[in-house]
Length: 419
Image (cartoon, rainbow, N blue to C red; front, side, top):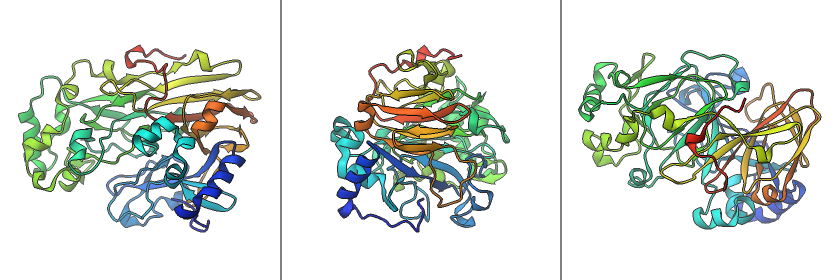
């Protein structure tokens, strides 16, 4: 959510302002923090938001536990603000949404082929930060989401060490279902929804979360994210279905199970279970097929800087999103040259990216502008962006990419420790 005192540039007057912003930024756009609350979760308080501002949307909306990056996707919250989830660009005392900017100049910002196919920036990322675990849930696949006019949502995790000074209450994530689990067992869990804890976690397996690693989560796969602060590149959708009735003593309403299913199917247990990708949930080699260790990109690393793949692999053979972590040592610089656009967030240190300053904040007040987030346009990425570490500690930034950006994306089964 942007600083409300900054004038808004309407979409029908955006062209000239956007041209000036891209020219001044050499293809880079400064983004302001985008905060999102969740009514059914408890904030983990590691995403730099000022302590008094965690309920800035109102206590009835829930605490702020997410910050979204380079987002043109709206948050699917009840009683939401009109722009909730959308990233804003700020330039010379004015602001406009990144979504409007992409509609105005999509080929320059996200690349011609991506804009021609999707007519938008079809991905986003976030910091997801909670005190404890969240309900065992899944995100619909593309065909199932289409039934309610939405898109499916594959996603990925990376656990940045800089945002995880503490574990919080449960640094383990349940994923999938135990091999051998039957649909009848899951059905009984749904039938027992109002009897207390419906026991869905008894059918699953928890994995201990490790800082500096990640996971790839296909749609239709159950998962109950643990309490490490998570960087989550994902498809541009906010669909989900909660399959767990009670979490840490808090009741989860049936509405959150069926919110993205056709109304006439809200009590159809076979239909609801049918939205799960059963084979992926009961995969006997789940970790082997979904766990991510960082991989150094030797071609993009050099003296004083290291570029690592942190999210890679494909979903059903499609490259939908990916992410990298760039570390630049004090006094070093590099020219970042990517084949496509990316959303950048600085997680450690200070420096310079082209004409824009980079500074990792210690504390951010709600509505305050920062110098840690940048949208790197396709135009700038392909031309090359110089980044310099001007501070006394490593400068570290995370950036995520849209579909079909990389010809050299590692396969998921190629994970190996970066050292």
